[in-house]
Amino acid sequence: MATSFGARLKRLLRHWRTTAAQGQRMFPPAALDAIGAAINAGEQRHRSELRFIVEASMPSDALWADMCNRQRAVALFAEYGVWDTEENCGVLIYVNLAEHKVDIVADRNVARKIDQSQWQAVCDTLTAGFRKGQFEQATLAAIERVNALLEQHFPADGARANELPDHPIVL
Image 1: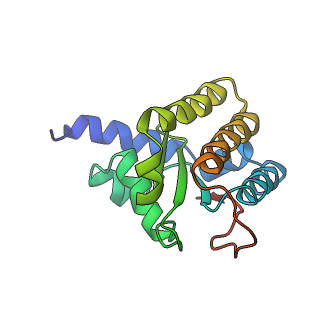
Image 2 (image 1 turned 90 degrees about the vertical axis):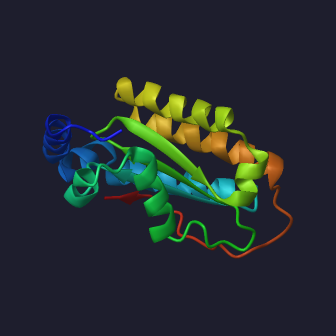
């Protein structure tokens, strides 16, 4: 179903009003460092790779093309190579601040083992915390939950290379 011109315009304005500076206030350097450390610590317990991307607002061309949050998450999953891991077990947590939405994209091996309801619970943890202004705390709780799920299905089996950077990305 196509979105009306008015709805598209309203969405564009919401994204234009959500600035990168707002994203940086919600996720300051110390919070990003803590999130990166949590990702790194979790990856010592499992064989998966986890990325965390926060986007204040989508690019205008994506909005005008009526790209939904999930489509944007999938595009970033590809752009940042989360799909390109040895065991096909990369996971992306994507936060869109302007839309107030979170999506998790899991590579095929992870998607076979962890069902959508478990990912939705992680997304709910994030959005509930964000509504309270607890960006760092909610993110750390969500990352711990993802790490626990990945550890259950892909436990560490010795030393391995870190295939993707652990530090979060703020777009």
